[in-house]
Length: 319
View 1 (tube, rainbow, N blue to C red):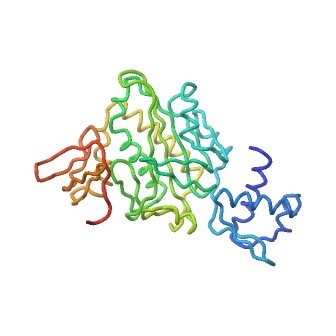
View 2: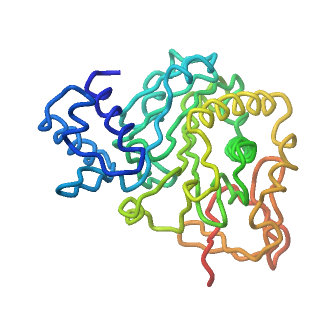
View 3: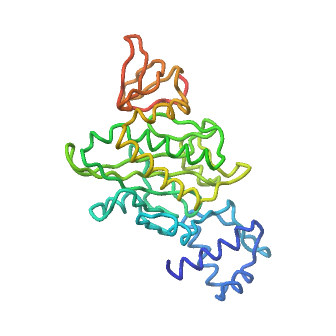
């Protein structure tokens, strides 16, 4: 980690107490000039950190910033772990190094300049407010072996959050995580390799921890974060547990396939038994959600009977 980022993290640590801190106090604590403090504050704001500046009072964070404890992270993870203050995208980083990686290697960043979601959407990635990570996994039997994998990842994330005390969680097919019926986390899986031989997967996860009002303006759907919980999960512990749970579940998935996760999925499926709309491009299919099959396809009971669908998106909005 560069001295430049060390200073920014030190500033954020002092501001995380929640009170206004004067520029003079920050300068004295870091042993640098007030002008340098001002430049660091300006840079942090360009990275999405919202900081109030009040003449005569100093600086104060609009929303708490949660940073990974890098030494604790690296000590706990037995795979290669890449940790950055900033990167374009954790998925992109692992994709560019796929030939050098082993299953379970992980990349975590505090800020993504080009974070991506499903269907080409942008994933808002301000510095230090949320968790952005990607895990590498290789399959020896090709892409067909990964059928249903995104549902497994959703189950892994739910299990970790539940163990850390997060209540009222649910999943929206195929892999969105919801808290109190608003989106909390998303998954983006990207593949490279061959359809019938070895392939590599990058499993990207973005989880909202503390969303500020300004950040929320860029999000076009109902969202939630962890900031209102009575006890906020520790971000470093969350990252460690998630990497370990993903490894266990992906190993189980390789041995037994998706059937090993059916009961876990059913326990948190938000739409099982409910009337839904499945949007597939310009087409819309209406039916009663009947869960998933053993390949991870969505089952809809329609006017023509029970049908399985591998693509599309369930609409949360009423007709």
